[in-house]
Amino acid sequence: EVQVVESGGGLVKPGGSLRLSCAASGFTLRSYSMNWVRQAPGKGLEWVSSISSSGTYIYYADSVKARFTISRDDTKNSLYLQMNSLRVEDTAVYFCARDERGDGFDVWGQGTIVTVSS
Amino acid sequence: DIQMTQSPSSVSASVGDRVTITCRASQDIASWLAWYQQKPGKAPKLLIFASSSLESGVPSRFSGRGSATHFTLTINDLQPEDFATYYCQQAHSFPVTFGGGTKVEIK
Image (tube, rainbow over all chains, first blue to last red; front, side, top):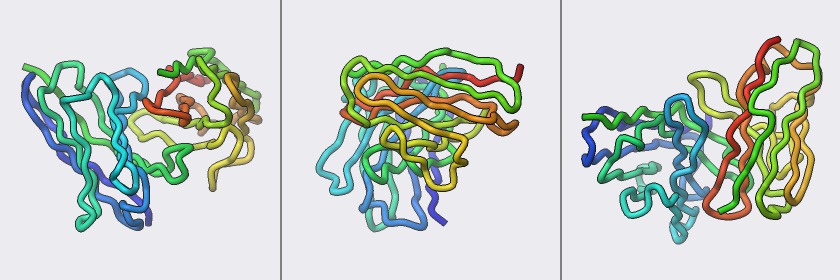
């Protein structure tokens, strides 16, 4: 079965760091572009970051640029999001999502909750 | 950045109704548009890609159309399981952007 499972969320103080993981199964991560998308409580979807299948192209939303880093470990078939200098407004459910054709995210995880609060 | 504007923000409908949701892009995105369905506490589910292509396993009562800056998602013969929030997303260029969402509620 094709699936992705996120982990690593939790409660962190403003200014703190957290590393999210996304473990893929049923497909080879390096064959696809992968993304992080977040959803603040009661709000809509916000794209956070993308990494191309080759790993050559990486993109970030302005809201997280210079604070978040997306990466991938092909030996573990896993995607990561290193989040530094966290802010209260980063509080959200973070989803990992696969982009099969470049025109839509076809596989999503269940999400991991990140809460930034003092 | 490309802004995606959805309307309406919510709609009340009954089982069996037809519902149409509109999504407008702030610039020409050709057919680089996807539609998602999200239920409370769940991950979004891809319904439509490339403006009008139905994702595998999605019922045929869902259909999408449009190009450039104007797109629509239509749900024919609304079923109980269709009550959810729907989002459009442009895949034309980074940053990827989503519409604000349309909540389809039971009348």
